[in-house]
Amino acid sequence: MQFGLMRLKTLRECLMKKIVAYISVAIVFSVIVLPLTCATAADHMRTLMERVFDRRDQPLDKAVVYLKNTKSLAVKTYISDPDGSYRFPALSPDVDYEVYAEHNGARSDTKTLSAFDNRKVVNITLRVK
Image 1 (cartoon, rainbow, N blue to C red):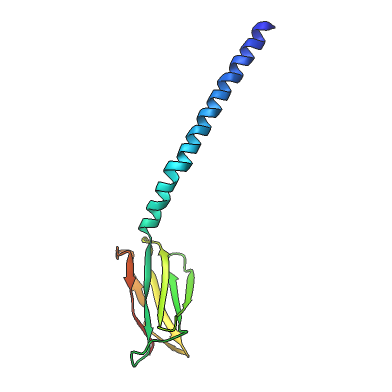
Image 2 (tube, helix red, strand yellow):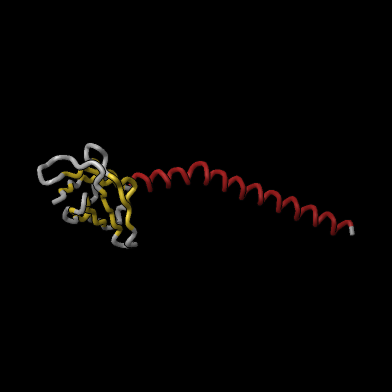
């Protein structure tokens, strides 16, 4: 009986040491490794921005800019600012995107942001016809 209790106590101590070791590894991973991988992923994202103009090269306020992810077919929109500017941050570098603008029933040509374009900030001017 005494031998069984000593063995159980030894097993419990060994198990506790392993749990503490696993927790220590998890803490190190979450404090050091995860922030590095998150920063790396954010570093690889890109931004699409520029301005929307009319035929006379005047900036268009409140034009609707559409951004379509050609992989997932998800569409994001942005209402242009008073100076005609628009911005789509945090875009995947591995996806092609299509972008166009509409204003009062008129539409711009559709432009493509290619996955082969490795710039972090891409400027695409849209002209509504």
